Amino acid sequence: MDVEIWSDIACPWCYVGKRRFEAALAEFEHRDEVKVTWRSFELDPDAPREREGDRAQRLAEKYGITPERAREMEAHLTEVAATDGLRMRFDIARSGSTFDGHRLVHLAATHGLQDQMKERLLRAYFSEGELVGDQETLLRLAVEVGLPEDDVRQTLADGGFADQVREDEQTAHQMGISAVPTFVIDRSLGVSGAHPPEALLQLLRQGFESRPQISLASAEGQTCGPDGRCR
Image (cartoon, rainbow, N blue to C red):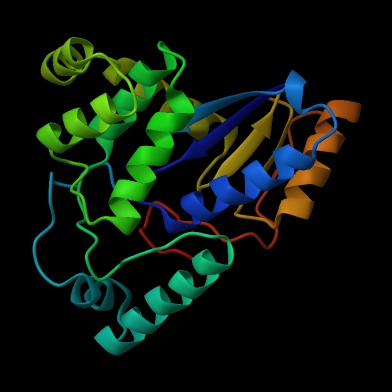
């Protein structure tokens, strides 16, 4: 059974959703028959390598709220993430482009290290204050997970896997995926949102047993949308 997960590196609910999916998969009776593929989705395709200025102030201006309210929203996300064993540090997070990071996730797939690369990028962004739009940072992180340094340098230098990132994003558009994380089983059943593990386990079981026609549903799961708002 193929499970494709569309997500972004700079999406907090994608990090939470990854943990919850892992918990669900660990309980799934047919987990050894599941192939997981990470698909690219940029919440802000026009982002520079690094955004300057105070993060809370930027959020406040974007959504028409106070900086205090923006910090409260991030504090809530931090508390939720902690219940899933994740340490989020919005106070040190450095916003910027995730395009090159997505390219390295595709490179990692060719070496059987896609999940490890995805995990390392999420942790670097949300827990360590790393700038994932910086190519030297990406090189270091990729080598950490076991990717050959020469392959990483060449990929970053020559635009390798850019077409694959764009293809993932075009496929998402065609399938009606407008928020992440989105989990899709065999291109026939899908759901958007960082649902609890028990709900994702039910999705896995339903996908394994019935394989219905495409039916993407947002339901009540938390997502991040292209407008940058995380709900």
